[in-house]
Image (cartoon, rainbow, N blue to C red; front, top):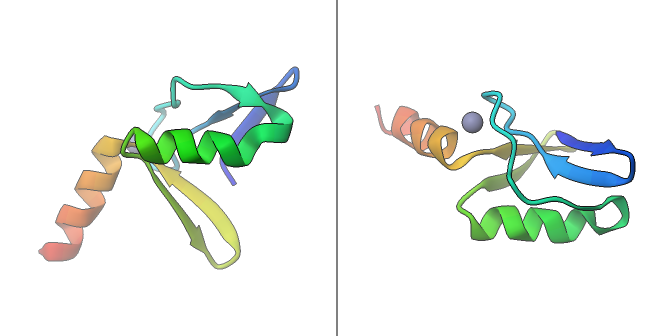
Length: 68
Ligand SMILES: [Zn+2]
């Protein structure tokens, strides 16, 4: 899970690059944060039991990679 919590404020980091989603939420509202990220074209996927987050640029690159 690449959600980071600093002083009770949660943020989502991209798993593939240093991008951090601009929205923040209280640590108790991490699920809401994932919804906000999805609305901003981030991908939130579960792989082998762990959540992974990808920014729009990396989501596009990953989809392009699958097509090649
Ligand atoms: Zn990224």
